[in-house]
Length: 401
Ligand SMILES: Cc1cc2nc3c(=O)[nH]c(=O)nc-3n(C[C@H](O)[C@H](O)[C@H](O)COP(=O)(O)OP(=O)(O)OC[C@H]3O[C@@H](n4cnc5c(N)ncnc54)[C@H](O)[C@@H]3O)c2cc1C
Image 1 (cartoon, rainbow, N blue to C red):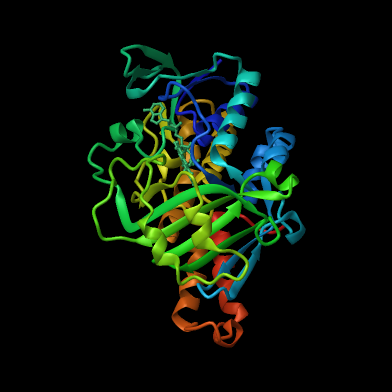
Image 2 (cartoon, rainbow, N blue to C red; image 1 turned 180 degrees about the vertical axis):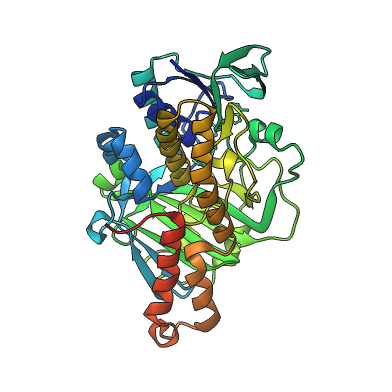
């Protein structure tokens, strides 16, 4: 049986492990951290990626913890509704979109991997520093001096991927957009209908919020995830960007001019216990992911600005495609077939996210709506708004049935 090693037990690596195991491959996952803990805050998983997770039999487990996102509301900083973009099954999608705590999703996937592949399928404390390969075997070399042989290697080792560095040694630094993202999650009263994601402001000063715990919702309150994005000119941690770095709170004052009728965003941010900061970074699309018996997936393959809920969603779609292509062609040819499908699609998303993706409607409105008395419908047509949403649905690959 073909032996496949995966570097990285993040959302992408674990979904790939489940998908490849389902196709009958012998899979082992190696994770750098010594203990997988529920780190990070909220993420969204789009309908087409949720359908992949449902296909892996995870529907009941997801329903217990994740919120079915009803819609995304784009608003001006004065609170006007610019556009409401439905994301639920009632609107015609094959599965719901979920708002979920990233760490809880990772632990849910880890549990399923250990139950299905065996308790030793994921080894922690195993940082892959490099690989070597010949015509039959690829050898992973770990920081602790040990090594492991397999037939194929999947680099699912995230934004700072060592596998990518070996494949593309001259790539240079991460691409920084100039915006910092401050994030947190805090218990609040239910906001709006308790199922909506709100994105308000413009490209340079933006507030995003959505609830992430179905359990909290059942008890009548909300675990509210928020992200405040602000353009900054002082130097920041870029090359060592870390999702868990604690942030300062001086950015909050910039949001005092936001007047959203149903939430006090300044209070929500001030009351949050832990605030983290992360730079808006990505990388230019690269001209190959696969070299012989080695390929990349997820953030290692196509790091992108976290716009349009694509980070985890595209990693999940990579996993599905990888398993399908390897089942049809179990060897380096299957890796190449996977890359031929996924690399062009994800490269387009990376580039579209640099132009704000579906959030372009915020900037269209910001340029025309100058005060609370203005009426959005007098200044922007519905067709203009739907054109942005529809073209992004095509790029990100999710459609109504
Ligand atoms: C700790 C953490 C917190 C995050 N928090 C958020 C968040 O709050 N919101 C958000 O939108 N996105 C967050 N992300 C990113 C988001 O999870 C990813 O964009 C998305 O899920 C794509 O998944 P991935 O599997 O490609 O990468 P990731 O989810 O980043 O997973 C990569 C995995 O590989 C491991 N790894 C790294 N290097 C090596 C190595 N050399 N050898 C072996 N293993 C290695 C990492 O520890 C990690 O577990 C976070 C990522 C991490 C690692």
